[in-house]
Image 1 (cartoon, one colour):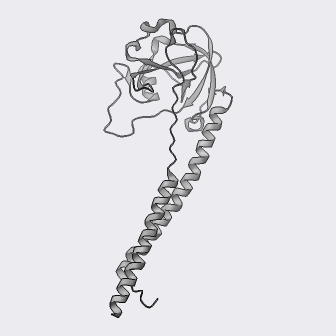
Image 2: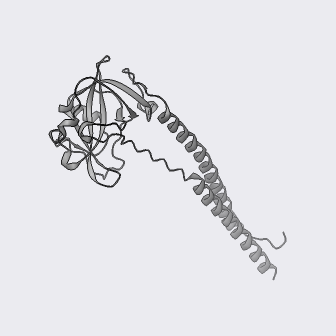
Image 3: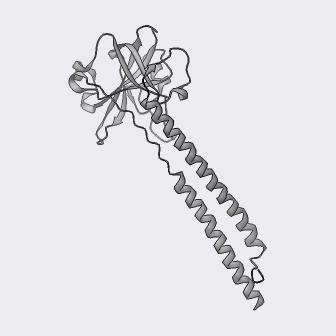
Length: 238
């Protein structure tokens, strides 16, 4: 191309930028495939029949979102109150209760479900304090903490928690507990509270949109580079 003369500096800027943008495009496409596989895996786990949660050491990440079953009794005197909003935005608490397993003898922290703020204390919903040995099913969840350092801390002294800080909760209770929470399925409870089935899984998959964005920017840079080179080449000849 006789009229094409973009110059050294624009070339040194454009070529690396385009290569980086194309690399980001490929990365986002790969992320999209990974996210699709992850969503399929989670959906498969949620649709599977519940299995007995092992009492030996387990890796929480490997049990995340797996359906499990437990048999034992609730220790309602040691409830944990995890601040949470209902789907309609109403403030309240998720009730996390130690569950002593019948055969294994270990303790699992079980999220029984959500109650409104005025029903936080167990004596306000005594009919829902299930007694005796029961078998329950739910979703295993790994612990989580605050995502940013500037976020407020949980108040263990007042038993108001903002995050799934399993180790800190165990220390607060003075108990040794299993390495995962279990969020119970939605079932009928005397008095209607707590409301189970509080598992919320949000896995946005916007990677294809991001890939098109990076690819579009790369294409735009190439077009600008070519037009600039042609214009500069013609001006030099003129």
